[in-house]
Image 1 (cartoon, rainbow over the protein chains, first blue to last red):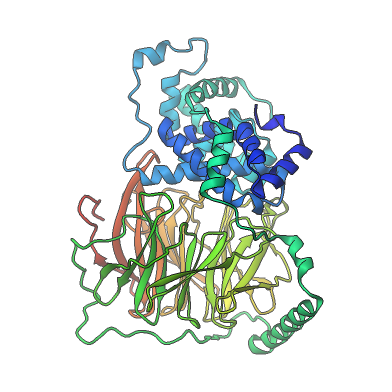
Image 2 (image 1 turned 90 degrees about the horizontal axis):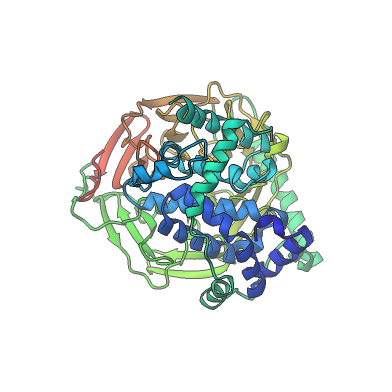
Length: 179
Length: 433
């Protein structure tokens, strides 16, 4: 299940119930959004354990603060924003680089030969982005957030989110295609 | 969004494959059950519908009070002029260091100190100490520390019942209490009794985006919480403000008559500080192209654009990680900001609201990455005892922006002389600035 699978009226009532402490409603939100949150956290951290911790922390924030969410239709970008924040904070508390390029180079080169961008190159390019920018890229290209949702997730206008994303993609393009 | 080109399609495919490694497994029912057991929801709920529960008489009294405050504020402050009059509200008595103190000498480097590089901090003017509420390695466990600016020593306070989560600390001068919030509940710390007391709910924000405690308002005697209304798409910045009085544990809305029109505002970041020399809230706003400075008259709820020349460009960061630090420097009567700029250099700059002028205090190279200007997440407060700013900790991101090194040193910044003084060197195993 993903965030698109829950219709607007269902989202509104589920968020309202979950915010009031309804366990079943909260569990429905977890089932719906957890995978997307885990992907964003992993994009930020590059580490499964840290990403797992970040998503757990994000759900705790959600449990405590969901009732403060005024617009239930924004629950997905809100959850993803909370997740990115938690992941960034966990990164900050962990000393030293987290995304270590310690993968088996030969295996990585062999993996997914049909793809135009090799995984090792991608990891290296992502490592050169800020954690915030990695989150943005994941939200757009993997979670498929709309411009409006992207803006809501990062606290900017949709146009500002697009502009920032465009700069990031230009940088990745230069590194992955020209670099 | 525009149609994706070949590169973007490849990028999306590669990202999807890479993020297949993410830990997506979860047991929703177990997780919800765990939270419900470990963190039960309180019976108190608050939201906009609660307004209807307020008796009419209370509304009438509230409106009458606000009207009186508005008229009184207009009479007291007058309309805003090009050069704002200096109105220095009372800020309470200030502690003086005992004779023989050496506040410029670094404290013992081997002393115990908070391990959290970015705690919530505020300055207790009467006691002459910086109070820090610091995170620990244990989730939900905070530590209360004080830093004596006369001896430059940390003390772990060990009070009972510390708040489980922190947001920001603000010193309430009238009440001589530290006020804290976790965004849900209010807490008050009495340094003399070394006791934290849990109070009532956080402000009933209608728009709770980035809501947090911000500053002490010496005119109303309340601690002010602020949230952005978050209407960046229309080129406006709205604020919602509430004042908290700890004695009554009550929140009062602070009306904002107009929304600030920033122009091509694309919501990068905003920073706020209360300037008590002009009794205005200073708002620094950064967009993708430029920066601006505005003043909010808290008594009338009206914004004014300062027309300040060449405001510095501080990088806000999408999620606020690189947010510039901001604090009002009472001695210099200027609002000071320090942080990274978009060009990867780092600035400190000061804004004089009476003349509407920004002045660059220091422009650091990116290579000076442990300088306070270049750190992320450092905390800055004004120290009225020694009439200078105090900066604690922060972290230095690695060149690739992944992770970083926490710092636990304490520095003082006299913006009038532009001199930094080391009050406490980093502890063992920490980077040396």
